Picture 1 (cartoon, helix red, strand yellow):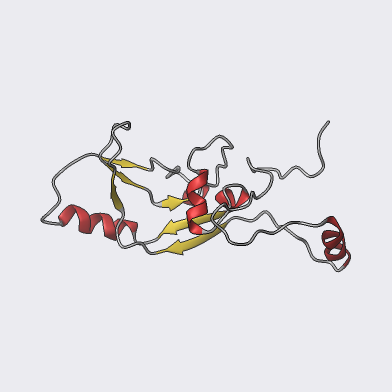
Picture 2 (picture 1 turned 120 degrees about the vertical axis):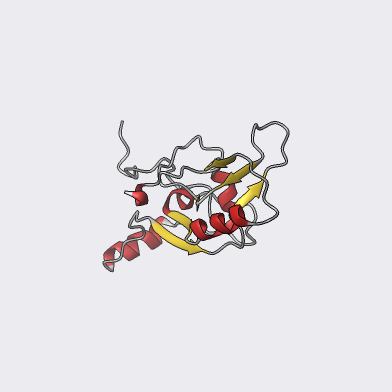
Length: 144
């Protein structure tokens, strides 16, 4: 049986509470019904691209169990929304949910090309492999 509440195009179907947040919230059916009667909608299912400006873009990986020394992630969050994605929990560090927020609030590192160029031109940089998007997909639908 197909549920009428299914959010088409999303892997997650709700926002789980952020384990780092001091407060949590809940959706109440009586409030949602009131909003519907007032002509409001609770959710438009739109993706937001939020610019962030980190100080660096290349990250040193110190884990012995992965075969890379450096990584670069131009995005945090992923609109593809694979429900099994191991990167979902990283969104909670930004104050967002690992559920729908991971798919709909995409943090875009706008100055990534300039930061990478600066890193590669640095006198301290020794040539090494940089794994692109080890945390979330670099081929987001926004790239289209």
